[in-house]
Length: 530
Image (cartoon, rainbow, N blue to C red; front, side, top):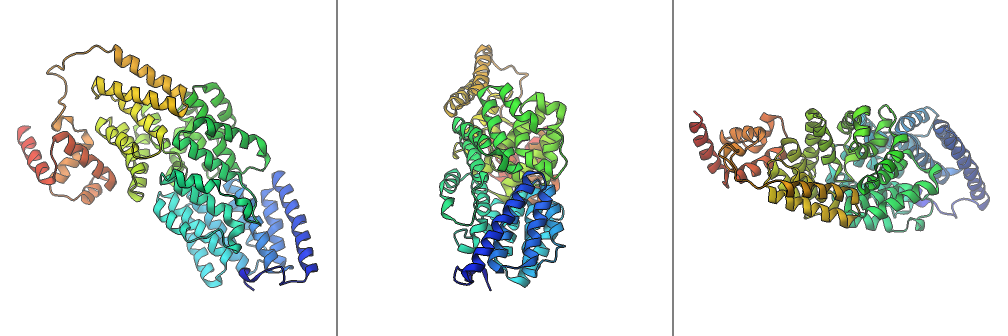
C-alpha cells in the first residue's frame, strides 16, 4: 500500500484510534529522552517501533517523520551515530532506504568525506524501493551536497522538483522549505526568502512548527539591513521556547543577536551572548556554530586567543553552506585574517568565495569575490567593482562594508576615500548600525585631517603596468602569451573567476579594451624593462 493511498477509511476506526494513541505515547517518550540528553536513545525507540510495523504504513510513515525531526534537533555527531545504529534494528526495506537517505543528508550538510558515497548508496536503495519518503530525503541530501560546495543553482534545481504541498510530503515540509529559503538567501533573492518564511505552515497538518524558519528570517533581515527587527525577533525566539530549539537554530539566533549588537556598538553585550557558545568543539559539531564564529572573528577579544579563524576556515573548506546566507561573512573573514597578518587564511577564504562565484554566477557573488580579492591584494579597483556590483543587490550591510573597505584602501585618492566613507556612514545609519557608523565617521574625520599635497615624482604611477598587483601582472603575462582564461587559471592555480576579475582590472588600469591591445602593451612593457 502506498502512502498516497492512505486515508481515514483504509483501516477500522478502532485501529486508527489505537495507532494514534500509540504514537502519542511513543512521541512523548522520545521527546523526554531527547530533552534529557538521550538523542540516540530516542532514535532507537522510534526505530524499534518502525521495525515492529504493527499499525500499517501510515503509522510507519508518521514515526519515520518524527525520527527525522529528532535527528534534526541533535548535534551532527549524535544524529549520524544514532541514525546508523537504527539500521541494525531489523527495519523493512522501505524504512531502511529512508534511513540511508537521512544519513546521506546529514553527512552532506556537514561536508562529510563519505557524503558522495552515502548519496550513491541511498540512490541505489531508493531506485530499488521507489519509496516517496526516501526520495524526499535523498533530494534533500543532494541539495545539501550542492550547497556544501557552493552550487546554489544546482541545489535550487533539485529542490524545485519537491512539492511540500503534496499530502505525503507534509511531514518533511518544514525541512524542504528551510532549504529553499537558504537557497534564496544565497542567491540574493531576499524577497523570495521573505515570502517563503511568511507563508502559513499551520495549514499543513502532520508537521511541527520549527524555529528554523524564524532563524532563517532573522538571517534575511541581517542580510538586507533590517537590524533592529532581526535582533528583536531573535531575542524573542531564543527566549520563548529555547528548550525545544535544535543546536543549529540556537546557534543562528545567537549569531544574529551578536551581529546586531556589534553593529550597534555594544561589544560587551555581544560578547556576553557569544562567550558561552565559543568553547572548543570537534568536527562535525563545530560546523553548527560556524555562523556564530563568523560574527565573533570581527572581535580581537575572541578571534586571536581562541584561533577561531583557523577553525572557521577549516570547517568552510569541508562545506561552504554556513557562508551562504549572510553576504558580509566572506569579506569579514578575509578582513580579519589580513588584520592579524594571516595571508594564508585570507587567501583560502578568497578562493572559497571565488569558487562559489564561479558555480553561482550571480551579481551578489561576483561582487563578493571582487571584494575579497580586493582586500587580499589591496586592490582599490577590485573594491570599486565590488561596490558597483553590490549596488545592484539588496544586501545593504555588505554594500556599506565594501564602501568602508574602499575608504580604507591606502592606494585611493583622498577625496574618493572620503566620499566612500561618508556614504558608508550614511548607509550604516539607515540600517540601524550606529557602532559601524561611528567607525565610518572616524574614517571621514581622519581623511578630512589629511593635508592636501601634490603627488611627487616618487609616487607610484596611477596608470600603466606599474599599477598592477603582482597577481595581475602574472595574469597579464600568461594571457599576453596566448593562453585562454581557463588555461591561465589552470597555470596559475586559481579559479576562472579570479582570472576574469583580474583581467577586467588590468584592462581598466592599462586603459585598453581587448586582448590584442594587451599583447601589444605587454610587448612594449617587456622591451622597456629590458
